[in-house]
Amino acid sequence: EVDDGDVLQLGALSITCIHTPAHTNGHISYFITPPARGGFPPAVFTGDVLFVGGCGRFFEGRPEQMCLSMLKLGALPAETLVYCGHEYTRKNLQFCLEVEPRNTATLAKMEWAHATLTGG
Image (tube, rainbow, N blue to C red; front, top):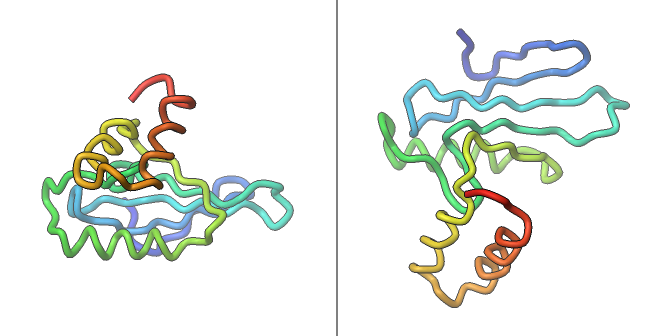
């Protein structure tokens, strides 16, 4: 079991545990820091809390917790690669376009999703 802020070592990689509740109360995201000369950017594995175009459902948590979780993830370095637990991109973007049908950023992301993704 891990807690918020715990750091694990896997070879030369540092893995920081980030408590990101809302989907479930104990949800953890994992921030991977490469070695100084690793040649690749940092990455975060967000499990069921963050997806392209959306966030996870609240099974145990509250909206306030999700906001705090998003702030934590948003504070990671801009070059961080994000790996989601599931592929819901098209469904999330479809919902976004129902709410804001003329949102040019969402329209562009949906074009990208159709051109790039094979599923979801």
